[in-house]
Length: 117
Length: 114
Image (cartoon, rainbow over all chains, first blue to last red; front, side, top):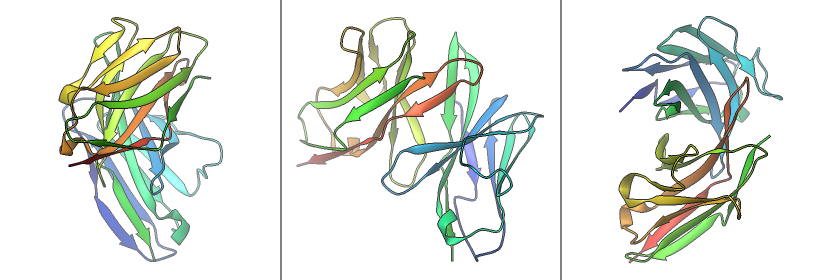
């Protein structure tokens, strides 16, 4: 089956620094990738949708200057958390979509746990 | 916009017992519905999906779900729970349109006891 990887799987950074999270579709090309944020014991909240070669579309309430998304190729999207603060600590999950067998298939990465100290 | 509601944030069953996780949807158009499972500190894995074909959908790990339009439901079931089924389960609906996006329910944590 299709595999989506994320790197790193966990990261600890100091307040004020920036952190980059990579999301890769390993064996397929994804024109659309999604970034989610998940707080403990809660559901996934969509942050943004990115299409290869174009600017990401952010959900309402998500600061685009703080959460920079780049979708440079059909297999790679990155999320950069700029000037991180403790409230940015969360579990970040990416997802890649491909259209096949008459419907969309969306595959999720294993997530990245960010802790800002 | 389409949405899903999961009834019961926590369900506990004995090993070997029936698993029933409830999901109701709201949609003005025929929905695409999904069930995902999430193990601790991991991403989501697709269990099954409904895309307007057969109303009874069989998924992985012995799970299945039945789409019932009259009840606007898409409940997830498994005849016999296993300890390894303990996880968080999310129902989701695909919001169709120019910006097709998955909308997730709040999740149900399944606990399996001996």
